[in-house]
Length: 117
Image 1 (tube, helix red, strand yellow):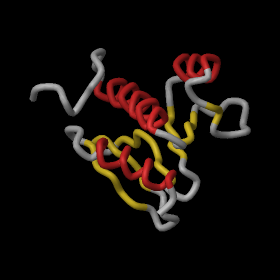
Image 2 (spheres, one colour; image 1 turned 30 degrees about the horizontal axis):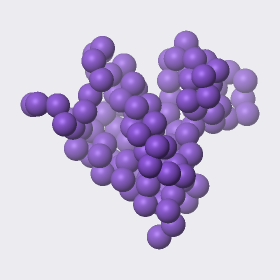
Image 3 (cartoon, one colour; image 1 turned 135 degrees about the vertical axis):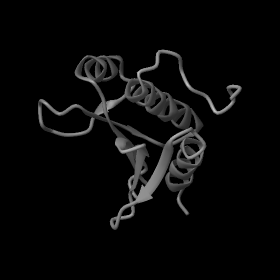
Image 4 (spheres, helix red, strand yellow; image 1 turned 120 degrees about the horizontal axis):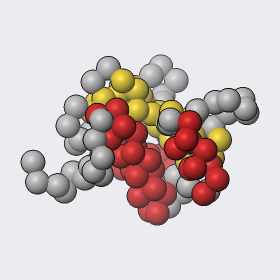
């Protein structure tokens, strides 16, 4: 197993502990991360990348700050990506998923599996 695949699996394992989140494997090997029926993002083990759809203001802020990259060459895409190459990328990808998770749930506070239930 490649290092990137192991890091993607680490992210998926953490996300799978979040209330209401489930992971579904696609036929191409990528994993779709869902909260109830809403897609939070996609984890691609082969490429070692997470892709998430963000609100446009947040998308633009993430791109400008360097926290994520434009996932598509389409100028109006709202999808960002972040490669997983090391432990700090796991933390950053989980922060991106946390932002998306809170947005979908209508919450302001960050989620952590370490939070009391």
